[in-house]
Length: 104
Image (cartoon, rainbow, N blue to C red):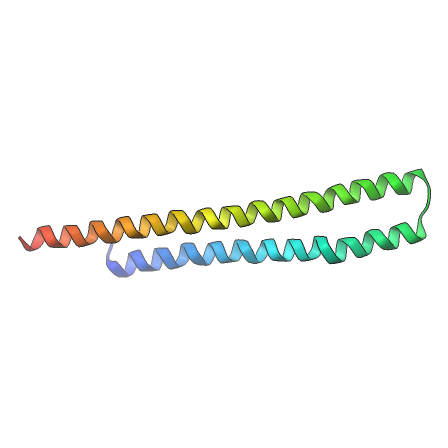
């Protein structure tokens, strides 16, 4: 059975991983909302015609995919936090019960 410090350490690691995913999602969203929009606007101003419209539509689809992926990463981070909390609570309770039984 893991020690209390191991249980806490594993819980902290899970929360850290969730934070990393959220940070990546924020960076992706920032790129999609600013850098990507700016690039599309520059293309629209300098390139006209049917090919330009098709390319811009595809670029906007990529932008939307990036935003969806960012949302998915945030959902995964949230799930990691919820599961980690449940595991932490269960392991701490199991450890407490094991110690209580061993004292008897």
